[in-house]
Every structure is written in C-alpha cells, then in structure tokens.
Length: 55
View 1 (spheres, rainbow, N blue to C red):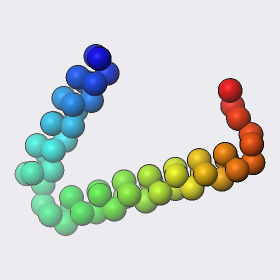
View 2 (cartoon, helix red, strand yellow):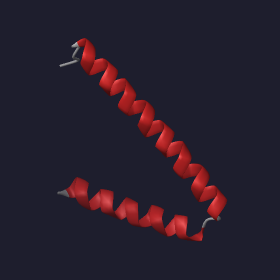
View 3 (tube, rainbow, N blue to C red):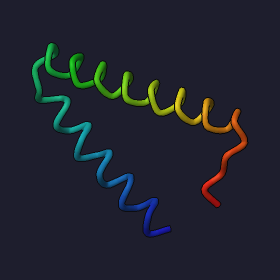
C-alpha cells in the first residue's frame, strides 16, 4: 500500500512538471521512455522464449 501511495505521489509530481515543461521536451522524454519500454519488452520476450529463468 505504501508503494502505491509513493507511486501516485511521484506520478503527480512528474505530471505537474510535464505541464510546465515545453512541448518539445515532453515529446522527446516520452519518446525516450517509449523506446526504453520497447527494448525492455523485447528483452523479456526473448528471454522467456529461451526458457532461462533467474529464479
């Protein structure tokens, strides 16, 4: 529950920051995050296909 509260607080701070940032900066940061999440998803999909697990 504390994790959820901290996450929502951080989200509120970040969204407040984005509201005051220039549009080009917000789009650039959004693109970087999208690429990062895409690479993470590809690594997860590729790693699960091999059957190797860290657990």
